[in-house]
Length: 363
Image 1 (cartoon, rainbow, N blue to C red):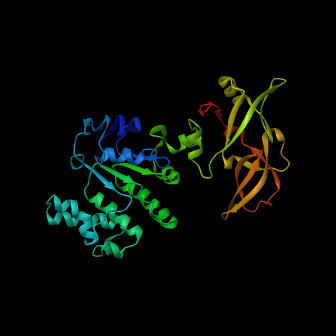
Image 2 (cartoon, helix red, strand yellow):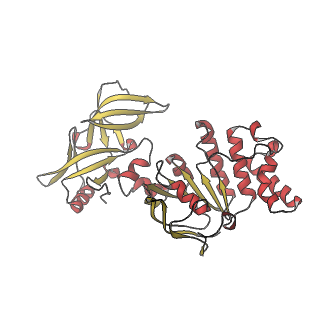
Image 3 (cartoon, rainbow, N blue to C red):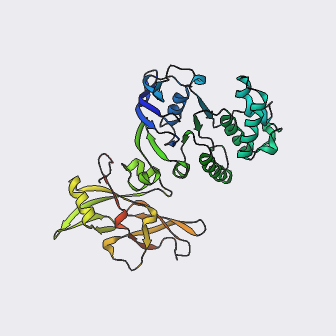
């Protein structure tokens, strides 16, 4: 499979620059997910790779060959769009074989490819139906099948699950995960859904405001975010951020906020010494807070419960800590009353610290 490289890729619409020098390398047979909020430039990046958008500056390389000047059909790519883009007057088989028929491939070869891909995607019984007779999930599978039959080196997915309902999205996500194990191709996937990114990707590329914020494995980005944006974007429920002042009393370092005073261990103290800042943002994942009514205040925070969201085995509490919102994950059988003041112990080994000025992680 070819290696794909973006070298200082820039995109302008008139005088407005929407992509600011994107540089990225995607390895052979890697599932790369571009993720970020709406307007961050992820779909524009994908469309430039596909050849559907022109490049203002920089270059795209596929297997060492510059392709920015090539037409989409010359790049050996297959794309799955958000809105399926199926031909309504053609049945499933004809939709899936359209590109092969344009290439005037032998009928036997077309039939064999359609049969193999349809079996892989569970579409064998629907080959004679038209798109209007299919569910949303089936239509999306047809769109994927059309890409797979082309046997391209790279598959591009532009938010393919965003039009589906929650249950079907979960099902299709599982099917995509299975598909990528069967099809050893380069896959570049764009989504704003961080759950899709975390569950599907070999590598996640987090984008914001036309720039790459961080890239790495899902575990790397979740456990070691490079800044507040990445930390707050990845994870459900999102990370809590609390402003704190660094205080030192009798050689003991504390992080002090309106309703907490955290005694720092040596690891945290060393990180604070590097930053030399008297104020920081403390990042705490909701899963790293545990209910502990008898806990000592030096490793806990107090939260006034505002909302309790019951989601089965787990509940998500939304509370107030000195005027700042805090979310906590806990077992749903934990006794909680709205308006109650609860104490939650912090897992100090998972505590994140960020510079108050630029939002960069203090490592």
